Length: 423
Image (cartoon, rainbow, N blue to C red; front, side, top):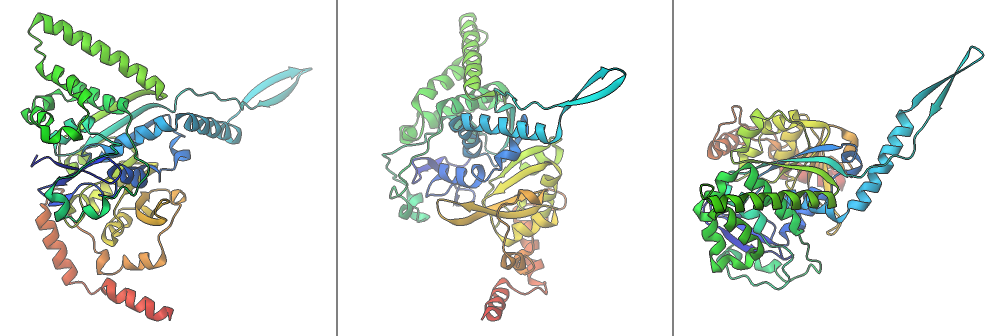
């Protein structure tokens, strides 16, 4: 990792700055709010609740807002979701499933069709499996400690001035969304169980112990990590404490899952280039969160080949969400086989981002004729990375040459012609 450079965003959640990309990870107007509005609220829950087990692919996990927002949404709406699932199961049963009762009387066979309209379900999902990808192992480990819902915060960072973030920080949002502690507890538990090697990185404790950063972290979670890091299995006393600790985690974890109406939760950490992960992935995903840095800075995760592979590993009724609505990204999605639509932001009353699906019926907000036209301009020429190995600089250079040599009209010429025809 380069430097850990956090700041508070307008909804009291923590945002980060990337020195490598010279860019911010999250919307300054509200990092957690952005996760909800671009990745969670647009989900078609009626479709998702048809599944008992679901798989989520979280690309560029960072400090985990998208995955944690999904789990938090389930917690906040568990009763509504269970009732919705019951209604869906009843509807599916009455429309397509019945059983036959054969009654024989005086050698005459009669068929009695019996419908069951009293489906009971105790869980929202039997199992949720998340595959979280990021190249930065430090962010994985810090993610359970990050605070949300901080109402009184102060920012003292040059980052804010450099990226003109201060203009957003006036507490315009009256609601301060917060991630439930148990979700962070789940994430920390799974990291400890599935990827203990990253806990040994000395940078973790130094960052958590730094007074400059203390306001960004949950102090009561630090004790859990400190215990894990200081435990020595070869010491008999500590080994016993270690076993007690993990029994406690197991009990608390299962009790918490019951409260969430989830039978099982699996968290798979992939510290690698996302291209390497999806190339070998054999799963089929119900939800894909694509939250990579902007295409102009990280084009390797926005190429036609990348989207083609995502199409291959997505369920037939799966959904991909991203904040980007650029023509080159949408053009690559369509070329890869996706149907695309807009993500509508109710709070701001405007479209933000793109949803990509295999089933066109899942699109609630189709893109306009004008936007489709833009895909055929130079702005719609997408990035290429045939072997999944090209460096970002090389991808950008090849793309620039292709745009310069293209006989397509520019986006500005296209928009000018449309305005002229509309007069």
